[in-house]
Amino acid sequence: MKKIGIYFRMCCCSLLALAAVSGVACAQNTSQPEVGGGKTLPKVYMFKEINAGNLVKIYKALGREATGKVAVKLSTGEPGGHNFLQPALIKDLVQEVSGTIVECNTAYAGKRAKTEDSRKAAEDHGFTAIAPVDIMDAEGESALPVKGGKHLTEDYVGSHFLNYDFTVVLSHFKGHAMGGFGGAIKNISIGIASANGKAWIHSAGKTKDPNTMWDNLPEQDDFLESMAEAAKAVVDHCGERILYINPLVELKA
Image 1 (cartoon, one colour):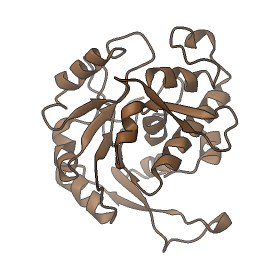
Image 2 (tube, one colour; image 1 turned 90 degrees about the vertical axis):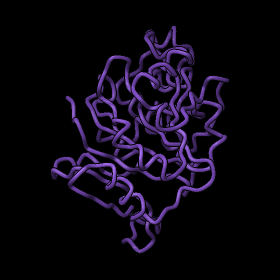
Image 3 (cartoon, one colour; image 1 turned 30 degrees about the horizontal axis):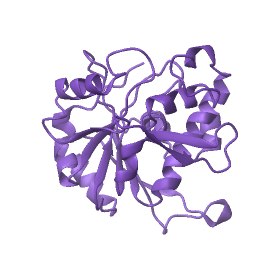
């Protein structure tokens, strides 16, 4: 993951995990020390006890009100699985921002490759009971430009993503077969990408066809850099209209 850290600067959640911190949220703060090019470091807020009330408190501490139509990006989890943020934990925060939980279909064959199956998974895991759920590529995809990309010139996201004014990113953490570590970067790159966009990232820009994706896998570093480039496209699109809250719960290898 070192190259992702160099290639795309985001909140360094892995260090916080090593420090045995249970939760972290990140926001830009102009009072922070400057780094190269006059840019400022993100200000990081932490708490040790993870519960629904503290998620709301840490959101308010950021001083970044989520306004307009708010997308809450999280993983709704694989059918039958348990490695996702539980609805009871995030309900108060999602409703505090009047958010819509957003996801996209997967690029691999399974029980979330079709919109109706993705909706069913979200329902079975309790997410539709706490907020509206939008499978963003149900009606196609839109292209976001990748500025200065090494592998990608465009990032293909679910078309509904452009309907939102603000994005709240809720990420949990787990081992990932290709990425090595799944967190906020994966959540906004592969997670917001359409099924075709996921194939585009996994193949480092070789194919948008999920059926040929596995025959066009690149070198590992090329995939990691492509994932970072796609995340950068989302961040560039959102500007200041995005924030990250990362509960370190149920860590899985």
